[in-house]
View (cartoon, rainbow, N blue to C red):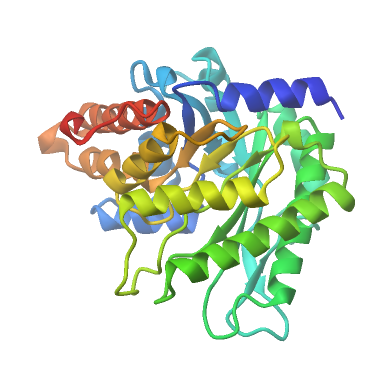
Amino acid sequence: MDKELLEATAAALVAPGKGILAADESNGTMTKRLEGVGVESSEEARRAYRANLFATPDCESAVSGVILYDETIRQSMGDGTSIPDYLNSRGILPGIKVDTGTIDLDGHPGEKVTKGIEAEDDWNDLPTRCKEYFEMGARFAKWRAVIAIGDGMPSDACIRANADALAHYARICQDAGLVPIIEPEVLMKGAHTAQDCLQATSRILVQTWEYCMNHYGVHLPGALLKPNMILAGEDCPEQLSREEVARMTVECLTSHSPTELGGVVFLSGGQSDEDATAHLNLMNEMDVGHPWELSYSYGRALQAAALKAWADEEEGGAEASQVAFAHRAKMNSLARSGDWNLSLE
């Protein structure tokens, strides 16, 4: 394990004013997104949209890294330059989604565990894939666990199984030179309260660090956490104010995450573009001592407007898509230092 490389990569990913673009949608998910804006999905359509996004002028001032999907890391820009090489030439680190989705957790209806460590029909085992991705230029990776809240959920078995998988993945990545982004996402779906979210998030964090530190020997300064914010379920009638979301999220992290962690990059998790930016901004302007950079690893919250614009050639198409992406990237860059405000929108 090259600890010096891992720490340098983690620090670059959470550099001041910058965050991560999550462009790692699976082909199935990206097909739904494209069809949602009236575009037929194909390998070329997915490549063209993403390549245009990555070519946005000056996006490197707000984007430190891009999480890619397996298809995308093997594709090229319009001039034939491989996408990882192009990103590196812009000073943007290529990353890679390495989990292969979720399966039902035996004996626990409604709960999932993430897979991707063992070889499958269409995938080599994780150590083999990590070695290949590093050789292709990737320097970090992502693995997402999904934790649902409901009747009797999350169960202790769900928490343990996903924490174990996250920690195992993290160690395999580090042995291959990749900084692992550890993503235990407590889902917004449901009518649960913010307190329910806080309890579930606290449990999965504590268990994940237990497995990382005491079972797999993960080097925490060379790893990043990608957590959800503390939010009530989308169907809950009692929603928190933005200030309450920021306060409860920071309190949860400072109480349940180790100080030596390399950084925190929040997921947007279905929040509106503006909410995701506002919450991050409030956290970064709080007068609360914590040891980490609080950054972003947003997908839809950076891309939704850009995708809609890309599909509408009459309104500018590719160029309008870049303008929309550049705007959202700039807003979140400002939120890194607590300098965003609504008037800038």
